[in-house]
Image: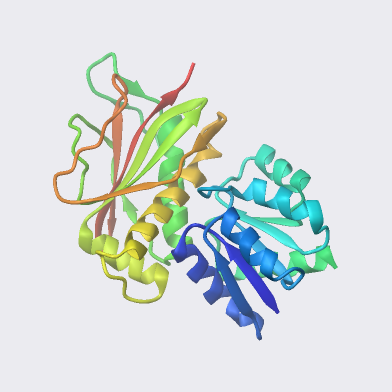
Length: 123
Length: 164
C-alpha cells in the first residue's frame, strides 16, 4: 500500500509513519505542504491508496489541496488529519471531498481505526 | 475546576477561556506522549518575559484574538520532543523547532473548539533563548497555567480575548 502524508510538521509525519507501519507492507511518501503534495501527485498519478492531509500548512493549506485533488481525482481516499475540530470545519472538509476526518492528538489505535474506516468508505 | 483569576479589581479572565487550555494540555500529552502533566493553579503574569527558554507561539484571529505560548524548560522540551519523535533530536536542529511548534499547535487547536467562539489559529512560531520576551495584547491579562512533569516543567501562557 502506498500512503502520502501531507503535513508541515516532520514530527507529525514521523508519528503517523510509526503508527501506520503496523498496517503491514506500506510505502510512505511525504510532502510539507499542498504545493509539494501536488508535485508528488503530479509525478505519481493514481499511485496512492490513501492520502493523509493536515489543514493548516504554509503555501497551500489542506482544504485547498483537497479541492485541487478532487478536480481530477474523485476516487483516491483522502483523510484530513488536523486540530480543526469544530463541526463547521468538519463539514467544510467533507464538502471539499475528504472521505474521513481525524482530530489531533490521537492514539495509534484511533488513527489506525480511522484509516481502516477511510479505506472502507472509499471502496 | 473553578478558576476565576483576578488581579487588580478591574482585570478578570473568565475560566471559560482558560479551562479549554488546561484540558487540551492534558489531552495532548497523555494521548501523544503518554505523559500526564500535573497542572498547578493558574496565575496572572505581569511581565513580558516568557516563563522558560523554549517557546511555541500561536496567534489567534477571528472572534478571539491574542496569542497562546507554550513555554518549556530546555531539558523538558528535549525530553518531550525525543519521546514524541521516538528518537533523540538535536535541540539546535530545525526538527526540534518543528516539534515544539506542533506541540503548541495541538494544544491551541484542541482548545479552540471549546472556547465557544469561531477563531482561527496561525502557523506556530518558535523562539529559543533565555530571557526572551513576547509581545502581549495590551490591557488583556496573561494567565499562566503551570505544568509539572517527571521530565521537568512547562507553562501555557494564555493572552486572548473575545474580539467584539
